[in-house]
Length: 364
Ligand code: SF4
Image 1 (cartoon, rainbow, N blue to C red):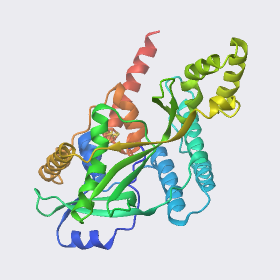
Image 2 (cartoon, rainbow, N blue to C red):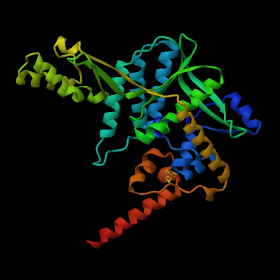
Image 3 (cartoon, helix red, strand yellow):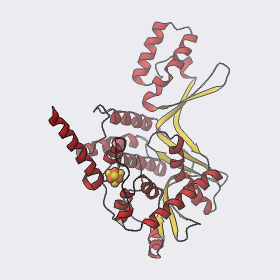
Image 4 (cartoon, rainbow, N blue to C red):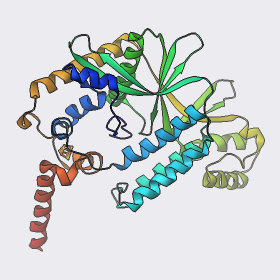
């Protein structure tokens, strides 16, 4: 999964070890999601405990998380984030771990990722307040005795009124529709766990690292905002900026020149001050509601998926692969930690498709 930290190698916390020793079953949202995405992947990972290959997204996300954590914990210079991203890119390139290519065989995915993350790193300022990072949560599932959910909260903010806000760094893309609910379960679980410890939950938030939000004021004094990937910050505002420049009396030639330069630098710095002062860009923070509806949905998902694991047991035949077709092939090849090397189903799929291609080649 993109930016997934739960599969990271970590020394197990003694509280989890003690629970296991007492026969408790311990799950994580990541483990549950794997069962629903591809049961065979769940089998390889959680039953057979087969090591997974290094994934570019997990590695890059992990390094960025570590650098952000260092900023919050030690108030070190934020420039460590850019350095951490660059060092990780260099290290991964050296050992041959690569970004997937786009459908035309180009490096757009890599270039876009780097452009977004480097700009985020440049803009990030360590927030002030009372924070804790990498907090383990262990939540007993009331409806499933002896089953626990575990996870790590990226950042816990202690608010002045004694409540807490929960913050999750996300290097993945924006969520929409069903994906929003799927991603929200992790935050809801963290909220439930902290609530069970006696805290009032103020806000659940993702900091969407690849994105920024720009706000500006309209003529009627209403505020408008635009969410963009960092790399498209100026491009996405172009028509608004052109209109503002035109209203200030700039002619088409000057507008084109100013905007071409602004877009090339992805910065408003070269635009007239009357324009610049109207726009404010910040890192995009997305909230998720700690509502009863979302809590019920999450608990229902947790119970349903735990039941799938409990029914499947350790028998490999109970863990079929996901449907592998052209659309899923990217997932198997680029996102799954097993892929061609360790998954017999995906290997068969590749070999079959490769063989068919060869057969066709023989026709001409
Ligand atoms: S390669 Fe595909 S089918 Fe095989 S375990 Fe991974 S996701 Fe499942």
